[in-house]
Structure formats: C-alpha cells, structure tokens
Image 1: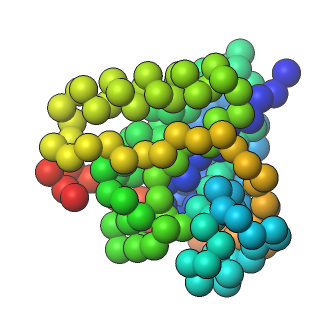
Image 2: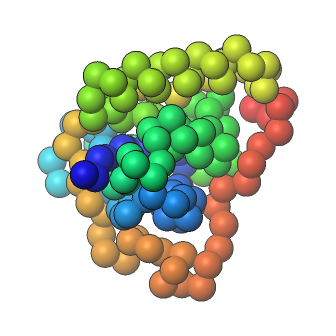
Length: 164
C-alpha cells in the first residue's frame, strides 16, 4: 500500500528530482500547498499573495523506504535554517516545511527536526515548519519532471555548517 509525504524545500524542481531518485518512491509531483487561495497558479504563488509553498507530494512504498528516511533526504537537500530562502531563491514560496498527513508523520517529523537541531550541524535554529497538509494543488504540467524534460540541472546546493 502506498503512502504520501509532502515536503517544501525551496525550488520544487530540485526537490522533486531528489525524491525521484529514492528507492521506494513510486511517484513525485510538484505543486503548491500551505496557502489560502484556491487553485493557485505559478504566477499567483510568485506574487506572494497566496501563502503557498512550492512543494512536492511524494508517493512511496513504506516496505521499501520509511518516512524517517524520506525526512533524512529532505534535510540533506536544503538549508532548514533559512526562513523563506534557499540559496538565490527568496520568497515565502521557498520556505522549508513538512506537511504531515497523519499524526504519526507529525511525531516523526518533530522528532527528526529536534535531532537535527541538537546535532550541532547548524549554528542557526532549524526553522522548518511542521503543519498538517492542507489541499495540495498540482502545479502546471510544464513544471512536472522539469529536469527530466529539460536536460537536467540543479537548483539545490548542499550548504555548510555556518551558511545562513
């Protein structure tokens, strides 16, 4: 039986690509969640008036990959200490967030975030929001599998210990 996980970690193209590489992930779709406007578009999300984050909805087989392992991937592909920013991408749509689907996912995400904070990996607080997933709006088709369609690329650069 497949389960879902939803994450935001900056530009959704790179987040989608990273999760598609994980054994046990059966699908990943980019979209918008966490806002207050129905049926947002890329243009409205970029206007900073909808409150949505660029996010990825991951379908996975829990017999092949655990939710905790997916959280580990999330932490490894972005800087969870920057509010509304990942590298050169700035705006509330680029915030770091875990959108949980179940109370178990919430507990696992909170524990994982605390372990990361306590690890000393970062000198700044981990600001990743953990909130129940509201409606996930699938992004426009040209955003789906963007790197696959457009010859690869990279929009996530792992950041070091003291990088704000």
